[in-house]
Length: 157
Image (cartoon, rainbow, N blue to C red):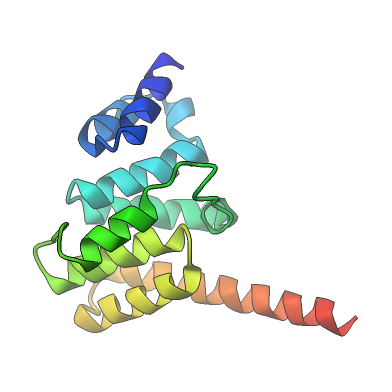
C-alpha cells in the first residue's frame, strides 16, 4: 500500500520515471489494479517505452475497455491533456513520427476516443507491421461500433 501511495505521489508530481519504477515493483495483486495500470501506461509513454505502453494498453482494454473510456481527467489528476499539448508543440519528442502518433493515440484514449482512433489509424499507416497496434485499433473500432449501436437502440425506444 505504501508503495502504491509513493507511486501515486510521483505520478502527481509528474515524475514519470520514479512513478514507473515504483509501480513496476508492486506486488502481483497490486500491479493488476486497473487504476495503477492506467497510470503505468502513461508513464511508459513518457519514458520512451511505447511498446510496453501498447502491450499494457492492449491487456487492459481486452479485460475492461471502460476503465480507460470512462476516465475522468479532472478527478483522476490525469496529465494527458498537458502531455498531448507538449507533444503537439514539440516540447516532448519521440524518435520518429510513428512513435509520436502512437503516443498521441494512447494518451487521447483517456479523454477523447475519437481522436485516439484517428491517431492510431495514422500510426498504422506509418507502420502497418505493428501487430499489437492493429489489435488495439480493432478493439477500439469494435467497441465504439457496439456503443453507437446501443445508443441508437436506446434512442429508438
